[in-house]
Image (cartoon, rainbow, N blue to C red; front, top):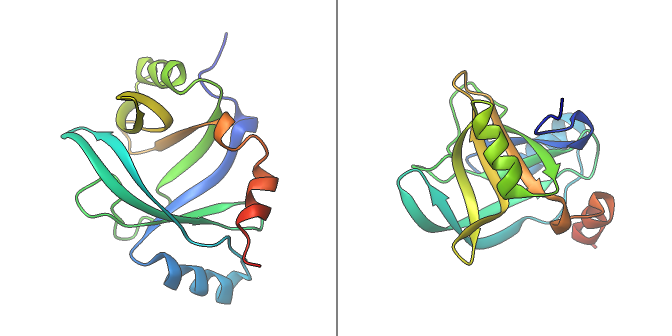
Length: 155
């Protein structure tokens, strides 16, 4: 049986926070994490209520196991939940549209996805009825995650 995801492709745990830079400092203080620069991108995304362009701000820990901190955007799936730390589990995949379809067939509803030429691309978020959220990311965007992290480390 073929699975939509492979356990070995889990590469980060995402946490949505009210202030990325404050939480980078906080997690550095309490656990010694070092971080990439805080990155920002205006990205077209498809949400349940329609297409929008959102400014996504995020950072990855340089230390494993890797954490992604994502800046909260109220009224979107990127909303910090009170008393719930983990927002999503991030998996690499080779084909976002196909993996997305297979996750939907497995009961994980499409919640949001990036759009390129008005088609799902780059990443997608899927939500199970129990609240488990999966992010799939096209492996081609970060074929060597360790090199990607090094390229984003403060100099």
